Length: 68
Image (cartoon, rainbow, N blue to C red; front, side, top):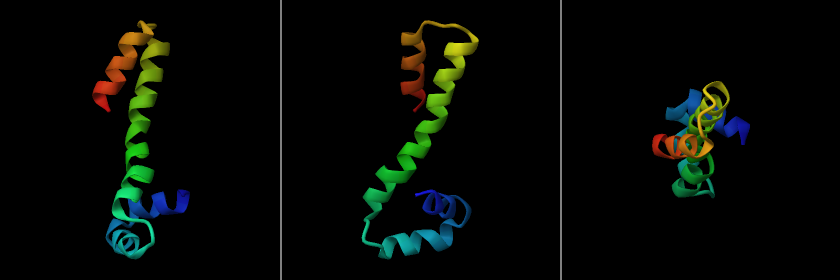
């Protein structure tokens, strides 16, 4: 998984045509790699606000969902 994610991030023009020809469809790649990668900033934002500002966890969770 790491190699595929790395190639998507650093060589997207070469990687997406290969992914198109793979057994996995575009939707599987999107839900398996792109969406989880997009959730990383929301998760760490949630963690950072909860630890740094000691804000109520429910508020921070809503904030993370909205930003995601």
